[in-house]
Image (cartoon, rainbow, N blue to C red; front, top):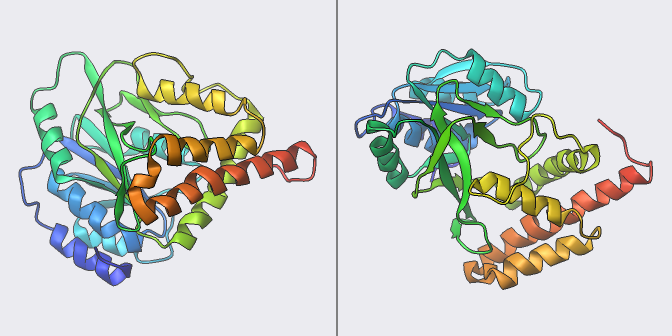
Length: 300
């Protein structure tokens, strides 16, 4: 693992020549002040694809330098929200290949996933427009495999022009109109920032999620459904969660993930992760919801 912009540039140097044959897929990565985390992401993307695009939101650090040094194509576009930014990329970028893979700046394609993508795209099934990919979180250098956190499937690989991102302010997912399949190997969501920075991200996300809870909008969003689609099932569970009482539901979620779903097996890193992600984050969302309902909070 490399740290800081200098380390990212070194990772970009290593990424310059793909080690294996590329696949017929274009990779799109969203960035903002991502120099400290972007290097390993680019390294993995360039081993898979010869067409990597960075959509940057006018970073003030070395993000653009790192990306261009590695050989990625860089465009800059003002950020509104993740869904709008992803859809702008889908509609605007001049992608070379028939398939597109979307990543965040701290996600990377595992070697096993790269092989799985190459195999899938060598002869994609007729009528299939997208592939769900499981995400494996690495926190404090440890994989988080328990607590119901793995596998969680995301639609990230789809035929060009067939996928869209839903209109949510937090936890957006892509969707496609056609048939889908599931890949077994994971992409790695590598939390390379410190715990304080990771929690600071959750403070921003809590504001966005509270707006979603209070807004009640459904247009352009994936709806919950008890069926084969993993994102629809997740949304159904989310709806049930938000029917539980404020604050109590956060403790119930922590107990479910850490105890019933064996999150404690992920050791001290797991304890820290579930305290932040399943308890503190959810308590903060509920506090913001309560504040807004009492008429004391600002609405953005």
